[in-house]
Image (cartoon, rainbow, N blue to C red; front, side, top):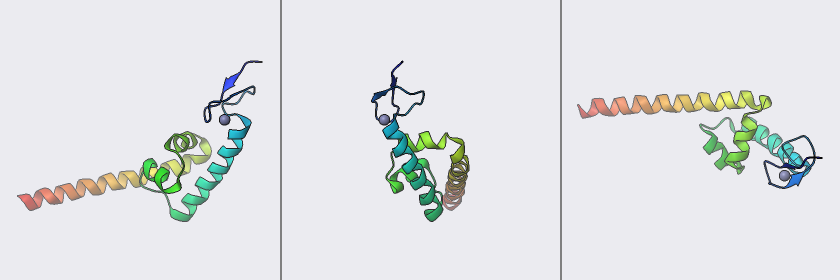
Length: 100
Ligand SMILES: [Zn+2]
């Protein structure tokens, strides 16, 4: 059987998945944690912020967000980051007016 390299810990294993059995359990726990974290705290303005606040690595969060079960969360993060960008835009316009 072909050996596969785990995308999370880098160990070698022999199933058809991208994750070794240990990391599958860790991923399951992290995903549950991430969902309840966002339910409790709301979606942060960026993935970086989410990583910082939740303590999960950026690499893992980006991996989870690619999965369909996280598509709603991904949308709410990009929505709030758009709003943040919009706010920045408004602020810079206001600043320009003040300078004129
Ligand atoms: Zn692993």
